[in-house]
Length: 121
Image (cartoon, rainbow, N blue to C red):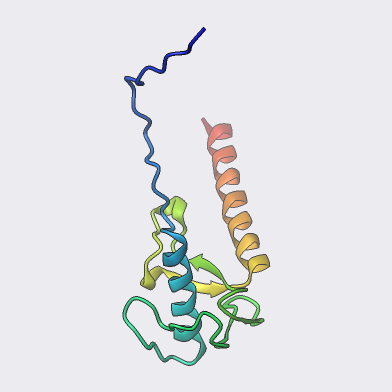
């Protein structure tokens, strides 16, 4: 018995593209943030450093722990749920625990608002 595959007539509401970009885009973004927030020097337009192990560091915007391009987590100033994108003007360096806590805080606040609206309505 052979299975036939038919094309779906309904398209999904999302695309397969990742809003964070490719792995090279994400690596370039981390290097940009390390150099931008570390010493203020940006070496290039798209990427900031050709050496992925350049040793440059910056600090977490929340707790001040020292980060490099491998330990940095990209935090969006305007969260994605509110339309924020991964652009240079909307990103800042954060350590993973602080970035996760910030996301959890935003999610918790949104849940509280939904509950209040449900009780009022």
